[in-house]
Length: 339
Image (cartoon, rainbow, N blue to C red; front, top):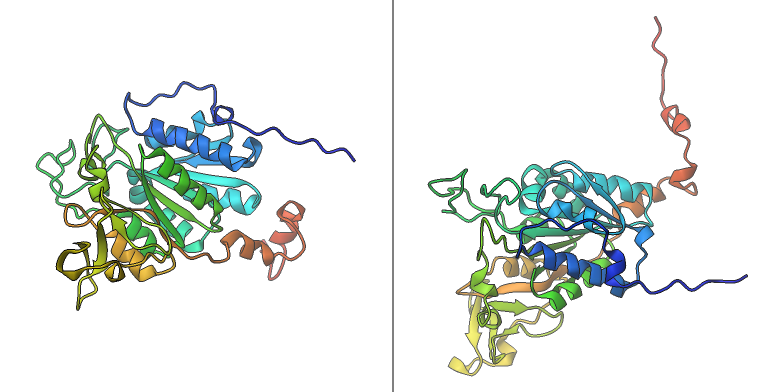
């Protein structure tokens, strides 16, 4: 038997022939390029890959990928992705969503995808605004945010995507920034490696309707002082000089930022990141500048059997393609209704 070695694909091979139509300067361009580079590095095949989206700026994504894709309706991408994965578990499924699509009308669907642990990757583009519909406030918009739908300022308490994911039982939660390309690619590779639902929040700048929303930790020169890049098993260090760290405030379960060498603080006082520690992950996703840096990277990773594998195991030796719908409908307790 002769085997043919398949050629290594490049990022360009994952790019479709469609014109990319986002606003100039939009962070979505950087995320698109990072995803295409990630897939090429992973050596996946275009014919085995599916991108599923809902509605919003981010949801144009499937058009720009030379893979299978499905642009669904508002908020329903997690439900469609679950069906695709159950029908063909061998497909590599990615869900592309935004903070509005995924956490407002799609919040209930997202909840069930995460708690079920379906083996898909979710990338949630968080720009804290509804960009496609011209700047209304979203579930992640901060209190006081002025928009066409909140002209006097939002009075809603915003959702923290990472806290939401952890709260409903997500087994993998990570964060990155649209323009931190090497970091984002690394996070996406870890998400792909994880068996079960991977939830990746990407802080994405909307240059038109919410420009600079994350400037407090993304501006050039500020990043090192306001970003904590997590590494499993490593002390939580940050700062340009790598001389600042995170510890538990003595006598409490609250986090605080400290400077090494001040007030007798040493490396032994710093927290060591443990991706499996759910309680620690909840503390990390709540950190906010300027008092604390933003936690980036893999915040929580605690694998468990995936939903579709457990569901299909109940079918026994038959595959989905071998099932007879007529047989299934008449299996078990059935009855006829007479005239």
